[in-house]
Image (cartoon, rainbow over all chains, first blue to last red; front, side):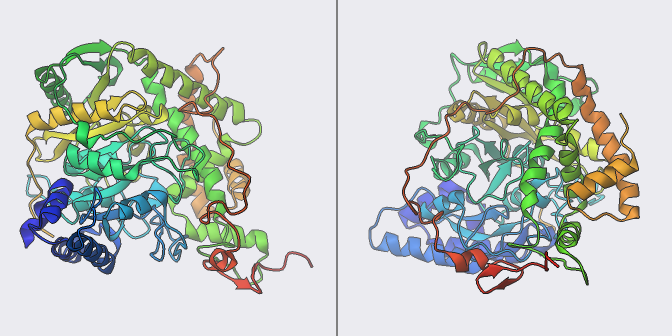
Length: 494
Length: 100
């Protein structure tokens, strides 16, 4: 039975449809892996009964000869940022610890409608703010990977979708949902040797996803390979009138159109991403990627994205500004925690509730956001950042006149140890230096595993595409996947 | 530009986050580090550049003017709205007395 947990989305779906095994057997196998992996702390809560319930429905539908969905029989992990009816949705925070939604997010509902089942809610950085999973109220996720130096230092699974990345890498689920505001799907995917794609802004509905920075937040799949990501993204995407920025476009058949023949395609290499002091192993893996895409038939051209160095500072104005506004809703009145000190008035209650309910990183960002939006500073910080954001998007538009996709590293290093960067917010922020520009421009971008570092840790390559061209991104990702031959898995210690 | 402790305390108060002295001690240098980091944006010449309003150009839609067209966002769900309230009484959210 254990071998079922080595299967990915497509293999499980096709195996269930063919009758090689039942959806229930698959759900039971993954439920067992989830239950045995408490040491990773990847799940905030396991929901084995939900996985079984969904599987039994798929098995019954198959027995009755009914058509099966694109995710039929596939049990998945759900990042705890998606509202799930009747199941706690905490955003890994204390302030939402008791929150049990009365409604289901559009993306999770679409996945259930496609036949997927829920193994549980995945741990993450609190309100998706973090790059290492160390800001979770429910303690950090530990990566299943370890360095090959025998030291066994616990490593970061990346963030904010670190429960998702750890769970997929450790074979606790074949796939998981993630959300990406400034790299939160791609960086954890790179750290754990899995694949993840952030689609064009607006492809996946934000309705029912706990908001962080609404102009940047996008949901996407995290899975073992490009095909599985394409299948799952197809199930997650689609127009939703309940989200005012949802794209009113048909969802292409990404999985059915996958094609790794890149003849006639141009791949851009942004010269500004080759920064001073770049990690030699990251540079080498990037060179490997260039060679693989050439081998797939693509022409490689150098491009320029002149405002790259300003992306991160712009992001750290825009995202906290939006967060300070979005998180104003947590007031101890309508849902979540309330802290009412003896004799406190309403204002005291707000301040006490938010002091008790938010973690340090969340408070830091709310304060920064409040400051940059305050009268007298708004133009100097927020308006300037939004102008720089325009320049960054213009850079990409100009670059895409010369190429079809862009190849870059996903992160500036392999996974770091837990605790290594936690005392220095800026060095933590720098982890997303390659991921943030595509977020600011709303572009589809994915990370695929490219190889192992000398310490035995996964390295990821990032492909950035034109708006709406998830297909081009997935195709280039597939070309890399076929040539990288990445089969490494973490050795089980948990 | 450096932000002093009084300003950070004021910002915390505007954001309705209670902070004790010890927390402020920690927050002030962190706050200044982040502000110093983002201030490099001042170098960029943005004259004549429009601030971004929508990352993917889109027209905002109007929904049909129909009551409860989508039951997920419609009305008459008071019990559901109140289900997660820390304190609800007589069909309302309850808060500490605001008028003496």
